[in-house]
Amino acid sequence: MFPSDQPCTSSTHSSSPPSPPYPQKPTSLNPHSTFLTTNHQCIATFKSQNSYTSSLILMGDFLFTGSSNKEIRLLKRSTLTPPPDDQNPTLVLAGKGAVKALVALPNKLISAHQDHKIRVWKINQIDFHIISHLATLPTLSDRALKLLIPKNHIQIRRHKKCTWVHHNDTVSALALSRDESKLYSVSWDRTLKIWNTTDFKCIESVNNAHDDAINAIVLSENGHVYTGSSDKKIKVWKQSLGQKKHSLVATLEKHKSGINALAVRTNENQEMVLYSGSYDKSILVWMINEGEMEVVEALKGHTKSILCLAVTSEFLCSGSADKTVRIWRGVGKSYSCLAVLEGHKGPIKCIAVGFDHTEKNASEGLSNCVLYSASLDCDIKVWKIFLPLP
Image (cartoon, one colour):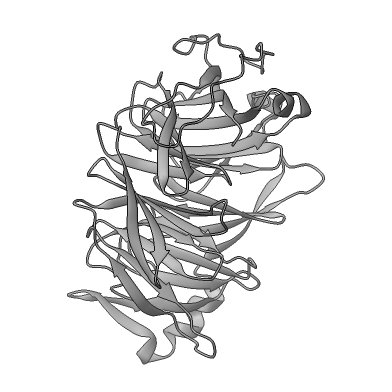
């Protein structure tokens, strides 16, 4: 992976962040408009020689990337360049196939893999470039203890059994509880599993949680767990007070095709908002009304499947198979598209976003957003976006 020598569409490429002129203050946001042009600039492109990036996560001053050929890399955000290859201890190789998801704990990085495993990495706090393998889930001790007791074995195929702590297909997504004491994983094997983050033991498994592969998982601040599947359903799970297991509390069925991505945030009124992206090209906005989740808005504009979502406290970002990223803002239950980012030559596989509310931007009525988009064209693009403050 290295900075591209090709410029991004409608932007000036740089291997390090340029200092673009601040745009004029945008016009006031009209929450009922369907589209507003927002100033944005692609400031860098990174290319991979032989694989695409399948997962991204921001961790302080660093960007971790997981690739389709089992690589995990570290990029320093301030320079937007990796260290020279001959001095690069930030590349790790793990398992077989793609690194499907990444989540971060203090001093640790957790990765989900196509080879059915979850891996835990220790990050040196003095030198972030030093990453060492800490554990593979399920751990050896966890497997050994479950193996000895027959009731821990489950039938996964006609002539094959394994213990319930194993995922038996690609681990597609990860999420952490609010207190970071629990790790949640979902898989194309249709299971939802919960792990302790202290000893990394599997403490619960919900078998046949969906009727098809599970592609996404998010947790809300009140502890509800949302899973999205190729069966077109979003399921809501909760561990009630005093109960050891999670139980199904609701099933949301409004999409016409399988669900690829979920995101959740708290809006300006301190209300929980759930977003779901689907093969049906739509993003549905869900809110609680009289104790039940209902669709309050359908965001349309992408011309192909929604593949990824990311949120901040103010904005929703969506990546699609139509090769674009869109940025949305909601005011109450009304949403508008603020920007369409074009330049990738393949479907957008994953995105990560962070904001820099500098004094200068605030005085100009702008919010400075830095967004990272990774595509099946093997590029990671870095965008600087100036958005109107609410």
